[in-house]
Every structure is written in structure tokens, then in C-alpha cells.
Amino acid sequence: MKNILALLLFAFALCAASFGQTTAERRQASEIFKQATNDYNRGQYDLAISKYTSYLKIRPNIAAAWYNRGLACYQKGSDFTSGDTKTIQANIDRAVSDFTEAIRLDPSSPDYYTYRGLACSVVFTLDTKKYASLAISDFSEAIRLQPKSSENYRRRGDMYDATFRSELALADYTKSISLNNKNVSAYLGRGKAYSSKQNNKLAKADFETALRLDPQNSMALSLLAAFKVESDSGIKTPGAPGTWKTLSEQGNVYFGRREFDKAIVSFQRAIRLIPKQTKANITSILIMRDRSLLLEKVARSYFAKNDFQNTIDNYASAHSDLINIFLETLGKDPGIRSPILEVQSAAVEGYIGPAIDLAEIGKRGMNTFTIASLTADQKRLFLKMATIKLASATTASKILHLASMIRLSLAKACKAEKFSGCGERSSKNLIPTHTSKSLGFINKAIEFSPFMKILYLQRAEIYRFMGKSDLAQADSLKANQLKDN
Image (cartoon, rainbow, N blue to C red; front, side, top):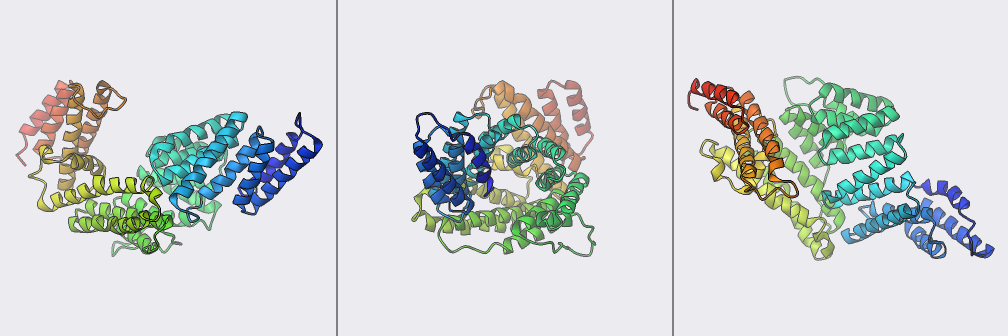
């Protein structure tokens, strides 16, 4: 992208004539524009921004100039090593503003939407998910204007994947590949999406295609390595070229395949490649955030194995180093509080604490716990943890049962219009959502433990709530045939 501005010189030349300006003024503007472009292509972004600003004072109605200055700001904002949070955020905000002005002056250019979407993607990774919809909207408009752009479908697919909309992500990756069957990133994205849905055959095929197209691609090598047949004599993780990101992706593949021991080894290898940070700055915080997220993955893997002590230990350490470096940095850069700490603190208070509580519940045994004994945070965690495929049928069934009860209680609250968490959606519209999820959880619990009487009684209650009396009666009869457990 560093040389992309050179391509715009032609567009600039077309716009060189301007009513009301002398030949000398036009020449001066042209020279400033060329100098700014050269500075940009050399990576001198501050100089480029300054010169584009001078040019815009002379010719403020040239969309390409706003776009070019936005690109320079975007480059600065995309470099997390170059400044503190406030500086990064300011550069991205300025880039978005410049791209927006370029769009106002020329709404027909797909590039303007593409790079505003990319700028929103940077803010999305830095702060919260509120910018995801803006990025998706811009990529969608760019696709409308340039429907044969493989990269924009891939970019939108990445945003769908980042916001857990896997079906939409798969559709975009597939479209991207149909437009350019050599798009390595699209194959990797689709392969990971398939893997998350446990469609390992299609995932492997995409990773193999990516590797064939780019034999040195470390991500493809690492992801493919997870599919190699390994002996039962011990845990082996392949020695694929190992950045921590590739090892993390490898761990995700193992986790999706319920090979939790192998997932743990991959995640722990990734952690060893991320040294603890001692300098108090934004770069350290971002690095430590990545490290703590890997520790959370290790904890979730132990939880899936019902190894509750290791679950507790890894959750407890997941954020301690991060919080320490944050507190030290906060005094130097108060601007970090908004984009980083608030999000991280919410993770600590709203997730890590209840996760440790849940592991403690697992250590003591699940039998004494009911929905009434759970805090609101623990209820949310049960819903999250219920999606993890656990190794132990009994523990899995109990967690899924509690999650089903929570969902059914929400559906009943919606029916009685006593649920305050509906947001912009009505209680009536949320009833089928909670009911179907409740039924899905309990069906999975029965799949794990088909002889637990309480599960059939719970499903009968769900069916009665849904008005399916015949199915409710059948489950009640089934429950009566089973012993209490």
C-alpha cells in the first residue's frame, strides 16, 4: 500500500485545471502534491500529512487529496509501536475524518470506503466492538461499487468472523475465493471458520490450498500441522514455524476437535514466545493482553478436561501481569483507561472471577447447585461455558442443564414482560430465541447423559412452554422409567 499514492497522480492530473487559479498557483499545488506523495512512499508520514494539509488549503475540494492524507494518518494509527493510546486513537480518528470528507466529495470511489472500513477495523481491535458494524457497512458499500473485489469480501469476512457470525464469514470467504482463487488469506480465513464448526475435512483442504499457493506461509503450515496423524503414545505438537499467533491458531484447531491436551501444549508454547513486558507503555499492554488471552485459552482447555485446579490457577494468573503493567502505565498515559483498561477490567470482573467460581463449583461437585444459588455473573458464565464440549459426560450434562434452565427462565420472564434486558427488542420477540437455545442445551445434555432423569423432566417443561404437549408427555413418561440421579 505504500506506493498506492503514486497511482493517484494520474487522477490528480485530471483535476489539475481549476477555475479561478493562476498557472503559478496550479503549478505550486501540483508540486506540493508530488512532494507529499514522495514523502508518503518513503514512509515519512508526518511530512506527507503536513504537505497534504498545505495542498488542501489551496485546493480543498479534491477528494483524492483528502484520501491520501487519510492514508498517511491510517499508516501512523496502524503502528502500535509508535505511540501511546491517545496518539494512536487520534491518528485513526483523523484518518476516518479524512476518508469521510473524500467520500462526501466523491461517493463513487470504492477505495475510500475500503480504507475507512480498515480504519474502523483498527479501532475495533484497539477498543470495543462498536466499530465493527461501521467497518462492515463500509466494506459492503465498497463491494457494491466494486462487486468483483476479492479482497473486500475477504475483509468483510474477517469482520464477520471477529464478531462470531461464522455463516456470514464463510459466505464472504467463499465469494472472495470465487473471484480470486489465489487469495491465500481467504483460504486461511475460510479454513479457520470451517475448523471452528468442526468441519475438519473442508478446513484441511483450505489450509492445503493456502500452503500450495504460498509454501512459506507460517500460518498455513501451523494450521495444517494440527491435522497430522499422531500416535497415541504421547502428546506431540508439530514443530511448524512458530510465531505465537500460528501456535495459538493451532491450539484453536485442537480445541475444536476436543483434543484438549494438545491444545494446552500449543497454547503454552505460544505463551513462551511472548515474554513478560516491563516497560510501561501501550505496546507492553497490548502484548500482555495477548499473553493473558492465551492463558485464558489454557484455562478453558483445563476446564474442558474437568481439571479444575489448573483451571483456577491459569485464570488467576491470566490478568495479573497485565493489570500490573497497566497500573504503572496509567500514570503516564491516562488516555489508556478508555480503550484498554475498561474493557480489560470488565473481563476480569465479569468473566475471570465467575470462571474461578465455576471451577470451584466443579471441585466441590455440581449436585448441590441450582439456578437459584447462582449469581448473575455465574449465570452468564454458565451460558458461555455450556458451549464448550466437555470431556466428562456428567459434568457437561449438569452445566448444560443449568444453562438450559437459565435460558428457559429468561423466556418465561419475557413472556411475563418482566425481563429488563431486551434492549431495543421486545420481550415477545426474544421468547423463541431463549426457548430454542434452552432446548438446544438440554438436547446436548441428553446426548452426553441419556439416563439422567432430571434432563427429561427439564425438556418436558420446555416442550410444555412451547405448547408441544405430546412431546412433553413422552419425555415425562421417559423420566418415570428412569431412576433418580
